[in-house]
Length: 401
Ligand code: SF4
Image (cartoon, rainbow, N blue to C red; front, top):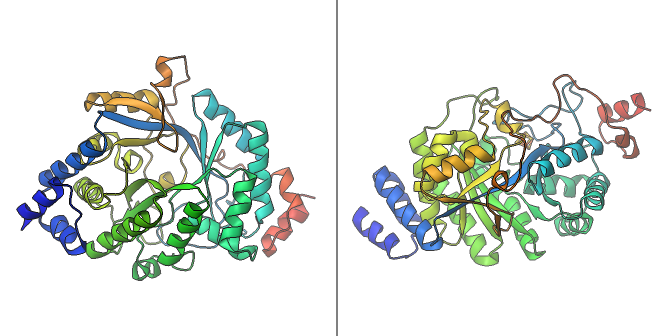
């Protein structure tokens, strides 16, 4: 049976749900890797591995969703809650441009005190200062949150954000796209599986490209991991709007859920299966941020063709215990050592060029930046312009008046 399935994959045929599950459960790890590597080589005939220089910025950690796998959020009114000011975000963009970056990956908590006008004003301000800089921003649950608190349809929210400068949507918040799992992780109310997919459908229809993700290793079964992949494959068949897929393991430290982290072998098997099942996705990223540089490098033999982002700043995964840091030089060394040619890309996976540090002097980034310095509780000046919904938010506005 496994041999037949292996032949099917090698011949470029699509696996159905049962076949994918059988392969996942029974194929030896080296076979999964070989099959995934074959699919990658068919899609990417040149031995190029891409990466992007961008900055992962979390504009607020205040969140009403309270997913039990998340160590990043703070409740409304918490003394550790923050919202970044526009000037702080401009500074981060300046630093990103200095190391050759061209994009912010901008995500945050579901803060009830940020109306849609705050996002629109921020996006417009960024675009007027940095016209060519890209905003890869607001995962589907954040779009839904904005839709709910502003009582606007999702399509209208997307259209308004695009008019203000949104370029593309990151695939965060997917976790596992099965509602049984979402209920157990307390993330069903932020977005059901259908709602997550529907935001992406709207985004693709509006002409935006997006990514897709999967966080595994909590309460899901192997069937549910496969189900997640099938749901993404179906939507990609329908819209063709996903540029890439990224999977990572749940990071348990400091979370309400706790537990242990999945192994590196589980990661490589899951990545390889995704490459085989998601036959309509061109790009798979290596999640070295959660797995470390060496497993990240190994990912290139298990279906990944992209090293994701040079990490300049990271807050979410670090809050849950993982703090791997690789700047462009280290990514390039890892890619070349694995036998591939490293190339810079944009969000659309268009090649921008060779490593920037070989073209000009760029500062090394040997430590990850953070959203804010520890203990900085300052409230940005411009927040006062936006009405707050929560009692704590209203009090904060009064205090800063
Ligand atoms: S994962 Fe996102 S939505 Fe869930 S609690 Fe954390 S910040 Fe909020």
